[in-house]
Length: 342
Ligand SMILES: CC(C)(COP(=O)(O)OP(=O)(O)OC[C@H]1O[C@@H](n2cnc3c(N)ncnc32)[C@H](O)[C@@H]1OP(=O)(O)O)[C@@H](O)C(=O)NCCC(=O)NCCS
Image (spheres, rainbow, N blue to C red):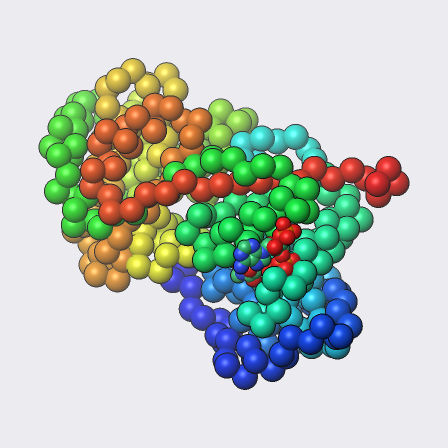
């Protein structure tokens, strides 16, 4: 999919200042009404506007997205958005229903007045009533309201924030000049590099079989977020008729001038210090740099989970010197007890 257009209009001053703070206003929280999504777009991040539109489709068609609106004397002053987590989003298939908090916003004039707390409490009730076992959120310390958000979570009883992932950004022109690229091993003669648009039906079928049997973790699937995939820049490695490694590249739906280096994977039996990971990563970098897409998306972005020790070492030693920014993502969650025992 191309970079997300602003499918909903941005905030206007009229919207922001339409409802001045009033301590005597009656504040309630209820569900998003039909046809209301567009006018509430200023109460969420640009990257969540598509989600808001989905919520606005109504119960039959909203894919379980929860959108709750805080209203002061009937006028919207806050919005919380959450969506069901896919069963294996974190490689942790427990069979329990979990909700992902995507955004919580208070109108600027109503911040620090308890609206955030009210929205989070209402989300908790709605999630429990719908049979969710927990709510999770993932966020960056780059948020302007980082401190307020963490205080909000703490006062609502969420677990203490955990560092779980590092995100790094680079200019492709710097990465393609990186020292590590010069030291990437030669491709062994019995391996073949292919781009994803060259994958055969047999390659795809073989990958799907391994994904369905959990041989390959869903989170590292070459087909993850396929709607954003750039097949001509995503690279696979074929060996003995099997795709054994890959680096998939996506158009980042969040950072509109970046390609997301999404899934780097090497078959466990071949993780023998033969450099197959760096080989596919390097090929993807070279292709990104040489493609006209580098004008529209001159940046690369990648995430490294704290638990992936080998990958973290590779990133720290080789890639980080070519990056201009890196920061740790944090996560927090709230465990829900069923309504009857609450
Ligand atoms: C984060 C946000 C939703 C908080 O909403 P809010 O309506 O101001 O929150 P509340 O008034 O209910 O306050 C909740 C807690 O945050 C604290 N807080 C609120 N604003 C704060 C600020 N500017 N600085 C420090 N703490 C702040 C409050 O003191 C309260 O903590 P306490 O219970 O320990 O006293 C709001 O700042 C916002 O809309 N930010 C922009 C969007 C965003 O970044 N959302 C978070 C990521 S999804």
